[in-house]
Length: 221
Image (cartoon, rainbow, N blue to C red; front, side):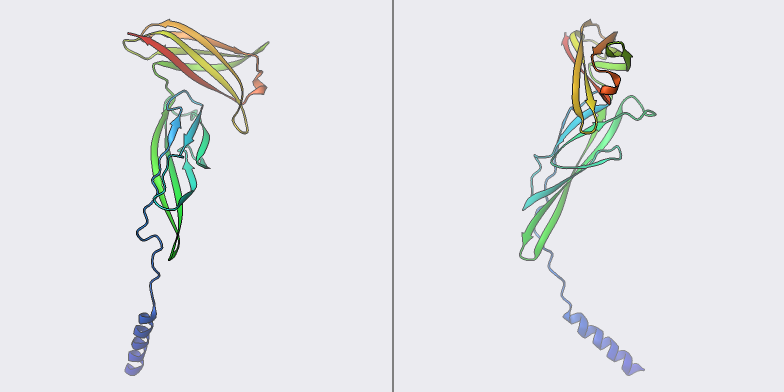
């Protein structure tokens, strides 16, 4: 029995001496640097946002994949993507989305193919526009199309808005197809003042799937 045990141990040692660890094909290779730009940086929800990762740089080889986590339970892919961020009906007026970009690079080495990843993370906050903020709004059907009624507020504590506007963009799905746009001009809004607005469109409610509102403002000291 003792001889058999020693023979088994000797055989294992002999076999272990023949096993070689394969070299790491990624050894010494630099990972990619992931980064992305966002447009628009802020605005009312729902909001169609462009995320552009073309400034990402490979450490070696080439970037072959761009993978996105939008922070709202959905995923995407591509160097440039367009994503609709929407409000949780049960959530607050302003919401945060943790967007994660993962880039994957490939490199062929003497030891074989190498794949390395890099990540970039940004917290996007949408739902409030400053200084001209849309407090509330709704879409109503009319005899000639649709009407948006809402309320804006000058969020600045000391700046008067000499001129502002609320722009409504109307989209159809799938594909976020822009089918119309209308706007309302506003003038001389004091700090903290609220102002009603109405935006009329010839589009009937069944001709668009969702509306995006954006504001622009000019201030006076």
